[in-house]
Length: 322
Image (cartoon, rainbow, N blue to C red):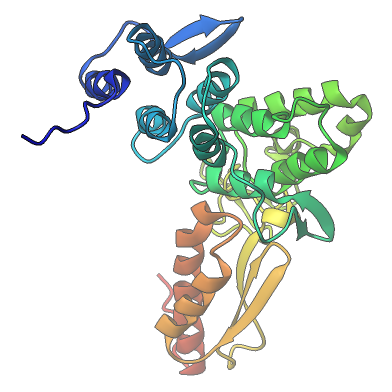
């Protein structure tokens, strides 16, 4: 009779625990080791595998740890730190260790260590992560903490390049008040002289929201006439005076007889011309993919509105007075 080799007991146990993680909910999702919080299920998994007789973990075990750590398709910062803790505290063979290290701390991108933004060299990994976290238009407190952990992951003092990257993120991206306060405090603690380079948009808004030359008050409502305000509303979201780097503006270009619309996104600008409004909107979409995605819908609506007004002016249609 054919005899097949029995699987390692650690593999059978890990498969059972992997199923238990998806079915069971504990009172807390972390354990404290050496003063830090780590993922509870991962630590319990490896402890039970050791009690079952495992002395050294291979590539198959590393795959089990990785699948157990994933939350859907994402890896949270706590789970990443837990995997780093496991790699440092438990024995792995070369194949297993390389498998986990390449997933937890992937090698630098082939595109290079730096990325140039507005003439400044920024750290590519930190910048790319900031762009991913701000896809919804706002950087919240937890995301700001994740960025700071990435900047200080090497254990050394934060470098000048990493400082400049975080400062650029705060200047170019919309951060919540708590997220901005957290990063500014961390940056100031690392280098007190850096605070003079940070101008909080929240402070600027407190100064100008009730007192500026573009403010229009009618019937108990407040409007604004400044350039870059897509909705003409006196609000933090639509204000065009807080940051030139984040300003999105759509305006008519040339005379009333010219069907030209200029779309500006920060420092990038493009003049659209033509009779087909759908073509204009498609061209504006290409320019609005970066910067402030939360303003894209308002910008497209303004392109359509201005195009309709210019078509009416070119055709000689006058607005009726009500």
